[in-house]
Image (cartoon, rainbow, N blue to C red; front, top):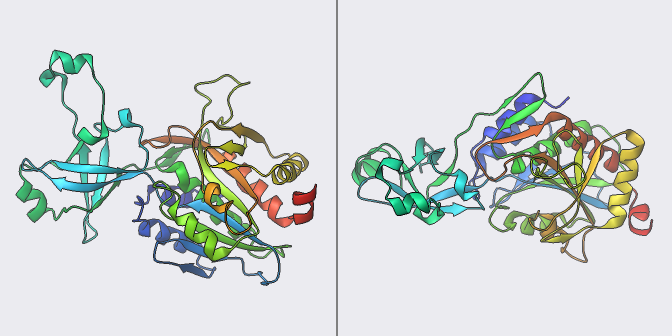
Length: 355
């Protein structure tokens, strides 16, 4: 069973692009028995202890970062202009709680300012649209001097949502933030723990990547370091079960792990998908399949490494990603972990590539 504390701590950790250090601290605390390496981007590399160095290399990928903001400037009235890091659902941002991390490591709570209807003109009420470039943070200060001198906030400070996660014991539904992609990271952490003493037919290197939300930058580096022959990419995938019927939806809570065939950055390897699906069928692991019109994962970068890398993209359905508050199901996370474990224990490059 996946430790619930590991899920909560990973999702609650502060970690917008370029500031993933607190997330990597959680990873290290739960994988103390593994040799973990890092680089200057905060990418983490975790090798399976049974690796031999002369077999096909399988990279396990998930990204550490979450969507956030960065402080751009501080105005005379004490409000703080910000720049987005990642693709926010703009309409969901006003009035939400955030944390600003200063250079000393202190975190200061802030609210995205939202003008009350009492002060809006008739035209503003009629055209009630939200533009990210117009949003400012309010830390409760009355002047720029208070923000700078008393709170120590400065341009370049990172900003991330303030949310405390929980897991409903009766439904198995997880509530929290940053399911894209802390749930993918949790999946990899659990996979490495379950396979620690297994004799695998391949070498396995987990690479938890930074800065995915601003252009898959971390995976550009990790794939060059690992030089994989194949890759399993894990993602907190946007659930669509609230918007489409059962025949049209492709990512529903409590319907199993999602296998992705196509998105804006990646065309799947059909042999890899067929191999995984056959193992899922044999082990009664529920799956659902997605052909996406948009979106992307680190597979977009990893698949183009070297002479090309066949990738299998596995998603954990997550409602309302790129906002403060998400829902996901423990059983879908478990299905993702279980399928990946089966794939790695029975990995057969010949069947995948020639089947």
